Image 1: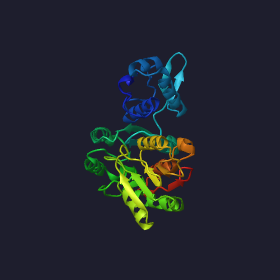
Image 2: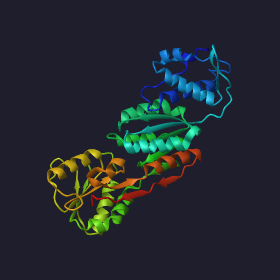
Image 3: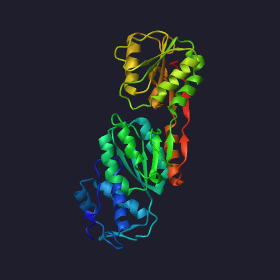
Image 4: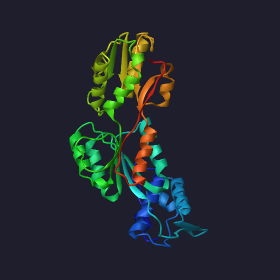
Length: 341
C-alpha cells in the first residue's frame, strides 16, 4: 500500500469538497512519485476511518479516479493505481473574502467553465488579513494560479503588499483592482465609480420624481470608496440633492427620498423602517439595492437592483486561466428596474 494513508489528506478548513481534496491528494502523490503504478489503495472503510469522513466521500473520489483511467478495481482485492501517466490539471488556489449568494454564483460559473482542466482548492478568509496571510504563506507555493478577491476589514495595505509579492504570472485578481499591486497580472473586476454612475444614469428619469438620493455606505466596509465618487458625480451632474449615510439606525425615513443600500443587513433595516412608517415603496420612497439575487424579485413586489454580472465574472476568470492570459476585463454592470422606484 506504500503507506498511502499517510500521503492523502483532507483540510477541514478548505471549502473544496472533500472528495475533490482526496482526488487532488492522490494526484499529488502520483506526481511526486510517492504513489506508483500498481500500488494498492486503502479500502473505502480504511480510508474513511483514517480521514474521519463518510464512506460515500471516499467512494465518490475512487469512482472519479476510475473514470479518469487512473484507478482500477478488482473484485475481492480492492482499488489499484492503473497508470501514472496523465495530464495534470492546473492547480488553483482560490481565495474568497466571504461567502454569499453572489459569491456562490461566481464560484459555480468559475468551476463549471474550468471543468476537468483544473484542480481548485477553495478557502474563505473572512476579510481577515491574518488568516489570509497564513493561507497564502502556507499554500501559495504549491499552485500554478492564485485567484484572489482582495477585501480586508483591517490591514488592507498589508494585504495588498502581500498580494503584490506573489509572482505575477500566477496572480489573477477578481472583483476589484487593488491599489498598489503592480506588474502584468490578470484581473476580472468591477469599475466601481463608472458602474454606479452609468447605472444611475439609466434610472435618471425615474429618480427625478424624488427630491433626495441617499447612499448607505457603512463605516468600516470593505466596499470601494469609488462608489461614493461615482454617486456624487451623478448627483452633481443631474443636480440632485444627495447624502451619504454611514449608519441607518438613527435615520428617519423621509417621503421623497431614494435609498441605495450596499449590504443586505441595511436592506432589511430599510424595509423594516419603511413598513413601520407605512411608506408606499415606489411612490412615497424609492429603493435601489446592490447585487441581484433571486429573492429581490419578490420582496416588496420587486426591488430595483444594480449589479455586476457575477456569473460572467466567474466564467471570464476561468477563461483567463485556460488561456494563460494576463488580460484585464471590466465586467458589465446591469440595471434591473422593478416596482421599488
